[in-house]
Length: 333
Image: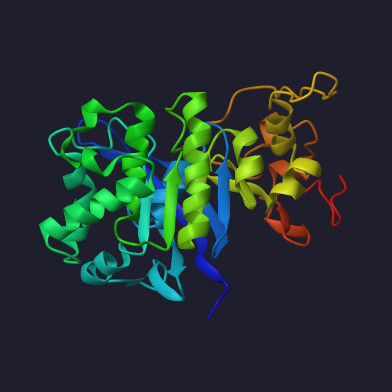
C-alpha cells in the first residue's frame, strides 16, 4: 500500500473561448496547465498563489468535480481517471468514492441551501448513500454538529439563522458526514472574520488528528499556510512553480515568484528587516501562448533561455522542487 493517498500527474483543465456569430472556439483559458502533486496520508498539503492562478480549479479537477482536459489521478492506488489512456471510473464507482472524498467550499453563505434545515443539509449525503434512514441520519447530524462546536438542537434551524463562522462549521459537519479520508478545503476561512478564522483552523486540526483526515488546503494567505500546512505548493498561471515543506519554503524560498509572495507577508516583529520585492508588469492572460517560462516577463533573474524553454519542476534538494532555469542543485541561483 502506497504512503500517498492522492497522486496526480499532469492534470490540465482548459476552458474554451467562443467568439463570433457561430460561437466558434478561438482559444482556450488554461486554468490548470499540467499540475502534478502527491499528497501523503494524514498530511495537510497547502496550495497557494494569487487570485486566478488556478488553485480552486486544481482542487475541483483533482477530485473529478470538473471534467479534466488531460492528466491522471489515483486515489489509494485506484485510478479515478487517466485521460490519455481513456480510463475513467463509472458514475456508480465515483459515487462510492464520494464517501471518501469530500469538499469544504469557500463561501459559507452560498454553499448551504437556504430552503433546507441544518439537519437536512448535514444528513443529505448520509441518506443519498443509503448509510442510514432519514431519522437516524438526523440523529447523526446532531452528533456531527456537536463535534464541530455547535449545539445538536440546531438541526431544525435554517442557515440564515447562523453567523458566517457557524455556517462554515455546518459545512465542515456536512463534509464529515460520510466519514471521508480526504477533504479539499477551498479557502474555507477567506470569508470569515479574523477572530473566527483561528477557531475554524483549530477545529480542522483537531478533526484531522481525531479522525485521521488528509487535507488539500487551498489559500492565498501565506501567513496561515506556514503554520497550518505540512507541505506547500506555490501556483502561478496554472502551474506549480515551487513545492516543499513549510520550513523549506519559508526559510529557503528559491523561485523568484515565491520570494515576491513571501516579501508581502506582514511582519510579525517590529525589528524584523525584510526587503519588499515588487514585481514589474501585469500577470499575463492564461489564454496566452507561452514558448518558455510563464513568469519570464516579470522575473528579475530572467535569462534568454527562460523565454525559449519551459522549465521543469525538478528536485533541488530532498522534497524541495522548483520550476526555474536559474536555480541550480542545492538551491543556488
